[in-house]
Image (cartoon, rainbow, N blue to C red; front, side, top):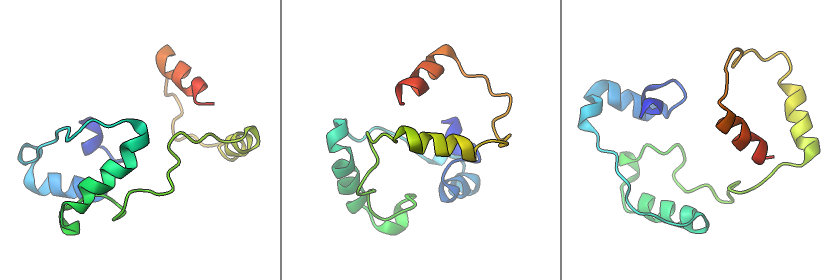
Length: 106
């Protein structure tokens, strides 16, 4: 749950945790679904709560989703080019497992 307290997480959720304390939150798996059913399940769950109780950035599941999408080699090259000089993650050492997963994503 480290991502909940870091700077890259949902700012509204971080603020609520700061005010109320992490011990006042419960995080649990509501259901297991296949990847193809993920967005429908997310939307169904989001619809079952008043919007003011949700920490989602958008009020609807992301449709169309980029889930499973891949970039063209040209697009990947453009992204790489745009990152030249970016020192944001300088010094980060990835494990062999992480490197393999990143390579597999293409």
